[in-house]
Amino acid sequence: MGLFSFLKNAGSKILKDSAAENDAAAADAAAANARTSSVLKNMVEGSGVAVENLDIEFTDGTATVYGLTTSVDDKEKIVLMIGNVDGIGAVDDRISVTTPPPTSKFYEVQPGDSLSKIAKEFYGDPMKYNEIFEANTPMLKDPNQIYPGQTLRIPNL
Image (cartoon, rainbow, N blue to C red; front, side, top):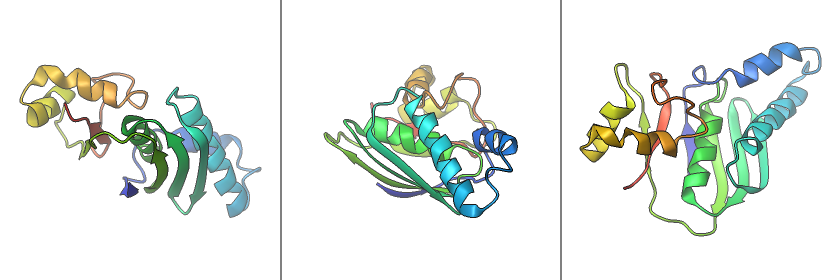
């Protein structure tokens, strides 16, 4: 897919919370980048999204992700999981897909948005908000908790 830009200081605080606990261990930039890569990899592996040969490199706010998935849905979920972490400014997607279906759209949440408002805009039916929610799990835990600047995957229906 390529390089995706995200708001670097918005999203999950997984990196900041973990970094605060291990400041002494991450004294130099190489160690900090390796530790960030490990935290991101553990997050993706723990999400339940299927990916083989997962590898993540982190340098200067950009996470480069390698691996193999069987669907574009899983590939996009991985990119969004990583990109919506505070401290990630871009995701360089190097994930291969074995059977690529039609691609989804990406949408940046605006102030006042809700999943039903977004569903109405893209599908003409606000009740299809759950399709957007499901397409963005495990990143989203609750359909009522989205925030401006967050990037969501809007699947083709």
